Length: 470
Image 1: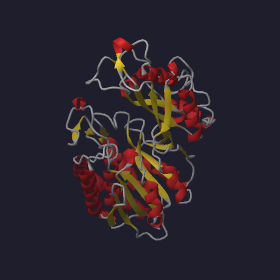
Image 2: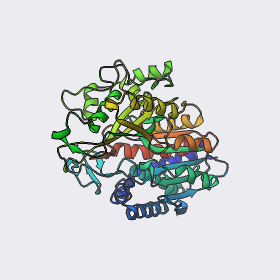
Image 3: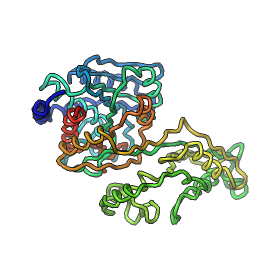
Image 4: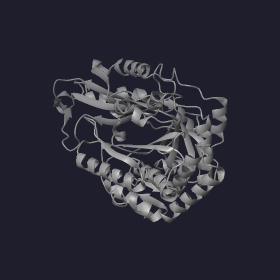
């Protein structure tokens, strides 16, 4: 193992290298952002392939070995590279993804979403934060060590996938197939959030996700609304009456019996840490883009972060009955909605599905037919206590990279593979390091990455590789 002075000198050289290469690293990110690698619509296979090729090219340029594009049947390509010349030292698996969400709402973008644009200390473009910025940051930290010291303090395996934005449906099968090749001692993911641009954060809990399709059928065909309106049951109206049962406005909880039955209570230590986090209602309104006069939806007396980190939520993510462009004076026979449910530690997905199905199918208006069907496989939540040598190393590394003590936080989002992957490798620790911040607007118009985080996270990873040896 390297001595203290050797490690200190290696870090200093790597950090200096990062500073010299900042402009080029931004160009590297721009190369990735320029490729519209949208995975959600099935129409961008050519761009997905081009992005995988670009990631492989950048891996080789950074100094990784055994770089390969792996193409499992029925899946978008995975890109793998490694550096394994540190016998007896830990092996770190770095994860990121190159696929992105569609741009949508193009009229709200202030610059071309496929051209990385710098303004006011931020880098704007689709994927800049989620998650192409992570690819660039990870490769920058590796390159800084390899180009200055000729090696790394630890062994590195890096995996970049192209299906995260559609639920990483093939990832666990891929990991099992390549289990020995990918086996590691620590997982590092840079796809979560910081509370602001100056405070580094490690995420220790993730919500899971369930998607339900709710279908209402009332008639065999649409009817003239003048001849039948008021007599024939309206499927769209019935659907909205059913969905309204999920609304908790003015109530203490989502009014579904059994919905909160298994929710893990926060510990006293966790609540104390939560209370210490200062939240400005005005800034939070701005971050969430609330319109004037619109109130927050969180439960009365509940801290905003507890609401999004440790309590379940329901969201209507799509609703369909008829096209606005082709609307006609009809009583509609059919209506459908997709209900997205974020679940938290210790909720069992099957029990949540049963509770929601029972509530949504009972007491149907006018006796309309209601069917609730799960869409895809549920994704479980993840939770870990921030203890052990890997977390201690990460805390030291982030402190060194940012110059500020890190916080452990939760996350309302879902990264479904984290728990199963850690279990697959025997319960290894996962370090989820923030790259986004409340202004990042991931999945939204004007997605952006803070230049400050871009620089400091790369520095933190340089420190992390050395700290994990200790």
